[in-house]
Amino acid sequence: MDHITWGRRMTVELVIFDCDGVLVDSEPTSDQILAANLTRHGLPISPHEIHTLFAGGTIHGVGEEATRRGANLSPDWVDTTYAEIFAELRKGVPVIPGVIDLIHALDRAGIKRAIASNGPIAKMEISLNPSGLLTLFQDRIYSGHDHRPKPAPDMLQRIMADMGIAPEHTVMIDDMPAGFNAARAAGVRCFGYVADGDPARIGDTGAEPVTSMAQIAQALQL
Image (cartoon, rainbow, N blue to C red; front, side, top):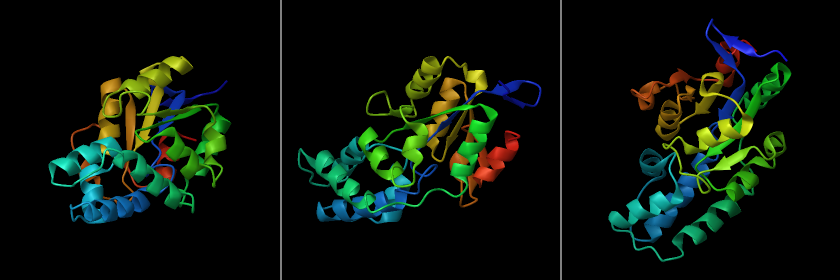
């Protein structure tokens, strides 16, 4: 089976995708719900502030920080908030432009794929199912609720171990520092998807900024 060779040193055999912001554009929906929710619970905050503070993290982490900032959250806040988000996501979310074409190109090249997201499996099933993306990944979906979440490298290491592929043959695609740093900690090359064209959030993580999935396909010579 043919694989993609990166320059003279890297043969790509596995691509690991983040979910929110890389496969589907569900983050604006979640940001709006969280902003309204926390405002009701005594912490006035905008969707933009939510995204700046919490994008790429977990709802548990949102709750902890919101409480520290003065929100009055009930013991079941995480569960009720997920239910609120899930209800909105079921209405459908946009697919990131070009990502399905990229997945099909990986298939043609014989390159394996998986998802590593800090979100729960249930959320990914809801957001990915309408577009058919859920079927494309099947049982290759890993959650930060089952492993230490990014920026820890655990999910990436688990995926590589399960698929029998070494870090030097693996690529990560993420849109947030948590993912960039997880890739660096796992020894995996990372594309930082910054659709707005602003690479500032990549910082010193070592991720390579791209503004489209087509750029990734081109870089992998697909």
